[in-house]
Length: 277
Ligand SMILES: [Mg+2]
Image (cartoon, rainbow, N blue to C red; front, top):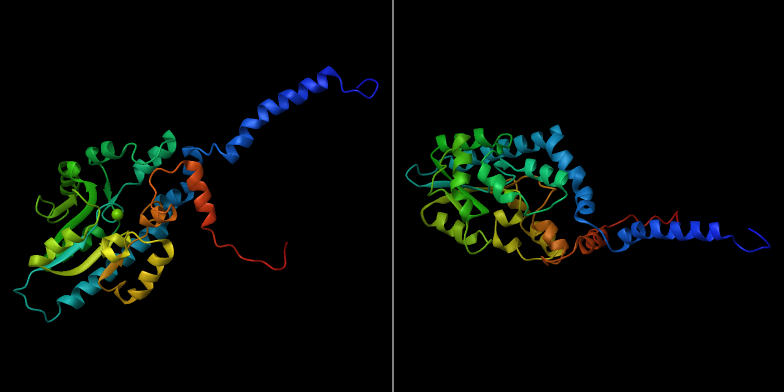
């Protein structure tokens, strides 16, 4: 600095600082990327793929399902037809390898989904195969009601058959055609069967009344029907995706990663600590 005036070099350095720091500022404000969103979901994926607690939760759910099945069938007419209605994704089959692939690739749903399903390489989740084999041995038919697109049926059947799941056939695997609402497919099963149990990782796997609701209304509906959980409804953990996330976004499908980030943050319910400013 000469005579109290900033030198050319100082001004130039300031100019360079502005040029190289502005993009990162913008990133925080408006250019939130898919990779940034994926980073937010990383821990839920790490938890699901690694925590022994997840395995324990699945075993807990299917141990309870077995108990409820025995309870339900006790002293019932043997001539009647019984069914277990079960979801597929994150209930029977573990799709987290494609989620981990998306994380590495910096992409998001639906990238890789069809290819993953067509590879038919998903593994069974803990406890589910033994439970469904047991239900089958007790004379229950198993209906797999899934919102996988119907075009993925052949591959889904192959995946289930390769893993030796009972009733893995055309008539028992009911995939999505026109609607994601599973109620018409449940009604189809109810025509000829008593549904003993409904099993899934999403509230829509149990009843339509949970669907198309905002977060508070979904929570209120669960409270209203709380006695059914662990009884007729067996629910499994899925922190990675589901209707719970869609409702955070007001069921809007075309949001940018930045919009989603804002809505995720807005959903937090922080402690109002009066001791700190
Ligand atoms: Mg599912």
